[in-house]
Length: 403
Ligand SMILES: [Mn+2]
Image (cartoon, rainbow, N blue to C red; front, side, top):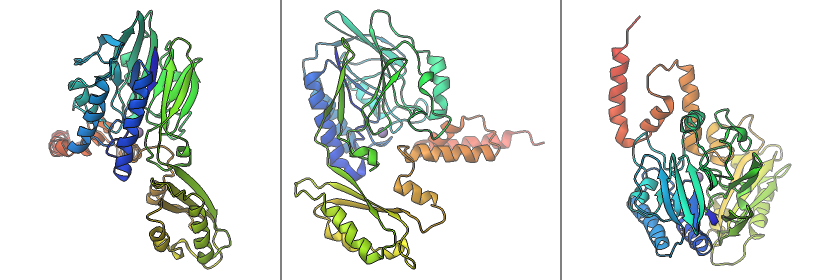
């Protein structure tokens, strides 16, 4: 069978909301024309509680897919949820949809509506003309829980099927940022194909000699250099294990570096203009041009002397321009806020970064509540749960023996 692998649509992503919808729509439509099965490893939506309009976009996209005459059908399911369709559209919630334990999420909602199959923590078997594909999927988790979750789920391949392991996490070898991130060789063994979401640029690797694929997001989010590649999805053939990347029309994105060494603000200004003009195509769809300034300015000048207001104004109808000053070396150290803004934390979401700071702080504070720290973080960042939670914590703190 042909499996389309599409990921990280980030519907509702505020900065490029229209792109997120249009590009997801194109990817899903193109994929549906050529695949038997669709698998979606998370982050269909950009936030945990999408606005109704954004949820409606999700419903729209998948309802349209349901009109196709799918020959492959879901024939078996091993998991704790109920299925409301046999459509071979298999998805999991990612880290952006993740909510506190047991709270429903937006991908689950699409599954309840019978538009797709939420395969979190379960095995779904799909059949067409006697051929079987089994997808074992693990929904997006906070990173420090992954090892434990894998151990308790113990994903086992299904005999006689082509086995896919789908998840939505960071991998240490790809993002050597935290020891919580699992390593390739910690993934469950025995699968024919490994599919991961979360990382927004394309990755093709081998794990235990089998293909490991990350299709990347269908929309630009982080404006990293790695995202200048074309967006799209993978089409994988289970018979030959061959795959190809099928591109979609995504908004053009360019990164230009401007060396500011020994230059004054006037000169830098001119060079920023030239860098932008190199990529103005006159096409209807404005390109995104990110200009990265780097080096040490001429003596006596600081970053703040580079005034960007008139440049941004000049090109506002022709391009989406972003100028980064964070690589200019006139500061002893970059503040965390600047680093976050400039996206120095490669591919890690703000939420995950927030969580890692939170966990660090708790370590230093002799955290002793019964609640798992990452659950606490989830609950504290969820409006509905916060009040109840604070009540519970106060109760717990005051019921402790005071030595
Ligand atoms: Mn994502």
